[in-house]
Amino acid sequence: MAEHDIDPVIERRHELADRRVVRTRAAVLDAGARLLFTDGWNAVTHLRVAEESGVGRATLYRHWPTVEDLLTDVLVACQAPLEAPEPTGDLRADLIAALATFVDPLQSSKLSEILVTAIDRAPTDPRIQAMHDSMTNISRAPVWAVAAVAIERGALDPSLTEEVVAAHTVGPALYQYLFDGRPIEPSDLQRIVDTFLAAFAP
Image (spheres, helix red, strand yellow):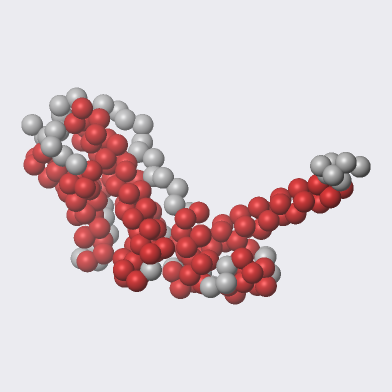
């Protein structure tokens, strides 16, 4: 057999091993995400994730030596973009629907705790800072997607930026839920959007 030839048996073993690694990683990260959003930041431990995923603790420690390593990968894996609903052409309705895509998980999971903990830990951990920045971008993307289209067609102030739009939409919702401790009702979303439009619609 020539030097550059690969034994098909060895190649098959490598392929199966790679598949096992991919499946194991997916099981661990899925379990970590479930624990994170159901029970909160402190629930993501090697023991809890091993129990939830069925993956041995020795394997977890081999791939993720510290809880911070595990949390970082879990946060990366679970940060799926929030998709704005299909636009209707009604700016007010579209903004309310887009804001709801962030508010719904905020109130139905541990997202608020995750955000607060990330803010607290970000200054001392560059990995958490990167995750916090990513979560910030994800949280404001749906509203900005609607606002950007409205700006292009002249329905909103052309000087608006993504940061300003988020501060006047996502910001009030977060303040009410995190600092006032009040649930966000549909009427609150309407009020927030109406206040935003009063300030920035021509």
